[in-house]
Length: 374
Ligand SMILES: Cc1ncc(COP(=O)(O)O)c(C=O)c1O
Image (cartoon, rainbow, N blue to C red; front, side, top):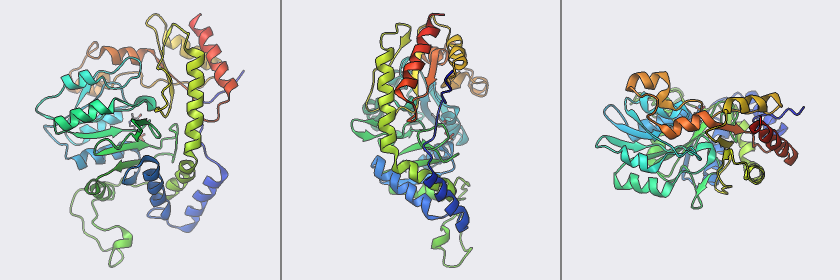
């Protein structure tokens, strides 16, 4: 039987050597690799500025703080996302307002987003689910017309574009994740991009306790002032060293992911029990997600795939407003987010990483077809 892993990071010996070099140097934080990773990320995305952070959740939190979200404010996000998107808003005292999603892409439904706008709305955080771009033309227009802050949750979307522009650059900030299953990993880790100098200055200060001068800018070692309540959300330099090589090779990795996704689309397009996104060259394919038709038992299919040696997952098994914390706090109940609930019950995330062979994908599709006929 095959044994196909769900994800497989692109880490080679040179990356490991770079990590060892940092550890031996003694500069475990504040070293050169964090800056290099930021420069490479700016080059890749076209953003003016980037700041590495300890994870994407921290990046979202810092972005919400830098945007000035706080008590009494509302920020609109999709109901179907990782809980981190909502948590980042909650941490600031603002209230996440959930909008329903599109059943096939899992992305925020823009009509529902519009219906949730109120006098208290201060921002929007769309999520590019599995790397599939949201309709940034409409979302950007809504944010401009209503004077809202736009922060993109790009945890899934290194390499995703919309109208030839990298996501994360449409509003004030974009936050990316380097968690191990992501397209690039530093273990834990993330990066915030922005085109606004003031925004990046706030992020850089808040990610390091609110200290006014980083070590290399101090007139005397240890001499600094703290003018605001910051956090410790920095990435270590050995994590950044792990990311640098992956970032340099990423364009190739992305092309292989797209080739794999295209093969899935071709092989599954005639399965009438699968609701499928067409192949989309702007998508960075963090995952290859399928959504099953209403008459299929998703969990049975999922187990069958596992039994046949295929690493699979679900993103995500419950819409965030139906998780106990949000349900109890804001009084949501089943039936409030029809599409997100359908998506959470019927989605399956398949491996699409660059180490898969065409034979692996053909095998996975054969197993899916068999599972749909059980
Ligand atoms: C959509 C989304 N946003 C944010 C996060 C948080 O990322 P991190 O684990 O880097 O904090 C995740 C995690 O996978 C995610 O899927």
